[in-house]
Length: 320
Ligand SMILES: Nc1ncnc2c1ncn2[C@@H]1O[C@H](COP(=O)(O)OP(=O)(O)O)[C@@H](O)[C@H]1O
Ligand SMILES: [Mg+2]
Image (cartoon, rainbow, N blue to C red; front, side):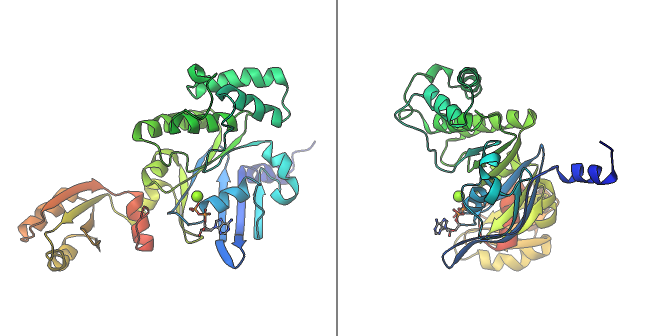
């Protein structure tokens, strides 16, 4: 085969594992996904960050080839989910928002059954299951039924199950929602390892800390639309500031503080219970606020986050 320029170009284009343009999902009259454009490249951890109802799961289910798109273009691993669904599903791993494990089977049997569902050879599935039990830190629970496991263990088993077919692309819908902080950190660690092993990750979340921990690049979704795109650092630089000062006032005192605050910061957001001052130097802004006679009852200097980005873009909070 000759190496034509065309071939090189198509190889470069092929680094997109998912490419959506003008992607729409409608349920009856209701448009849950309103024409989004997204590209996910090989090896990256890509996120959809947005509040409940933003359209994240609807988007994920179209990418996972379990829900047909209403309109727009969608390519997953180079194929069209409408015609290549089974072939694509064989090469991806899916962790749905709700665990759908088989509660009547043991932990190990859940992995075996799923592997055979993919038509993988029995001996291969058995060996793979032991590797995955170890990876998910569930070896000790391998012969237990699923039902009594903790939420974090069930989530790890669902992830282990999604890896039975050695997928090159792993879709995780709200991987840590409802888990305690320790369980979340353990899961993030496992996902980080997968990424280091070259698995491309797509994660949806409404937790800004999860997006910052896991994602190289993300889109912020709201009301079925993409409202911003970039790395966490780029988004914070563009829509927030390096530091944020939070000022809480005694009832009735916040309103009078707003004009002063506006002179001290690049931008001020007035929330019902506090003022946020966006600034490069939080301690300096706080000192200036005290010098100008402001008397907050509580103060906090912190760095800018994706929560600030979302607030700036939509006027609302990520978590209601
Ligand atoms: N099967 C469905 N039928 C009707 N409406 C749906 C269905 N699935 C989701 N929706 C609606 O679409 C919107 C987006 O939902 P979803 O994609 O689950 O958002 P997210 O995952 O960001 O919370 C919501 O308003 C939800 O109620
Ligand atoms: Mg969802």
